[in-house]
Image (cartoon, rainbow, N blue to C red; front, side, top):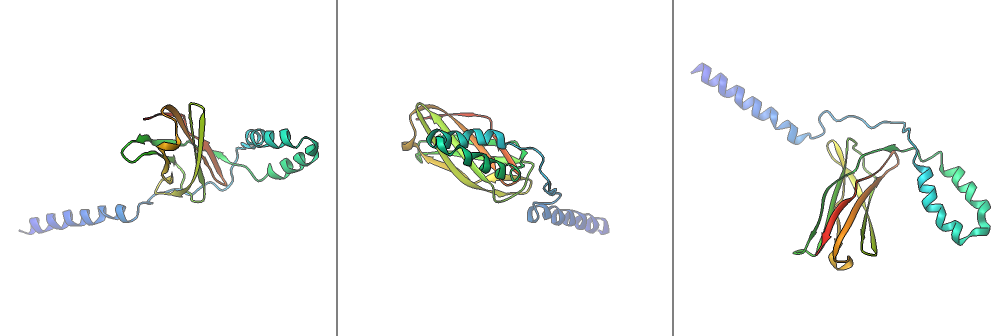
Length: 175
């Protein structure tokens, strides 16, 4: 009888202690790096400065001042972005995209979904939030009525103060 009581107590204790992982999902999470090392600003400047130079050619003296002040503040680590779901649901009439950044946990970043299909490009920005051992983009939903029928490509870009990354392209079929 005593062995049965001890065995039942051990089983009960292990069940109670195994539930701690449910209540504390960040168990064993690591801290974020404090000093980022990689800079991606050169590619971004080429994209953003191409438009103002084309429309404001005489103001070329202002452009170098802006780039000098923005370069030191944009050291960002490269991260992987993974698209978990990129699916067009005809029953809800929405394109749903769910993405995450594995390996980092931070809030305050933004996720930018870019859809390209036929001659239409659709860009939607959402916030991101930290989870136990990854950062999750809020679900991105786009009405199918705003997208062309046929094949398209979806990418998700994550950007925060310390991290930057873009997912691989994921194909999606819009009904």
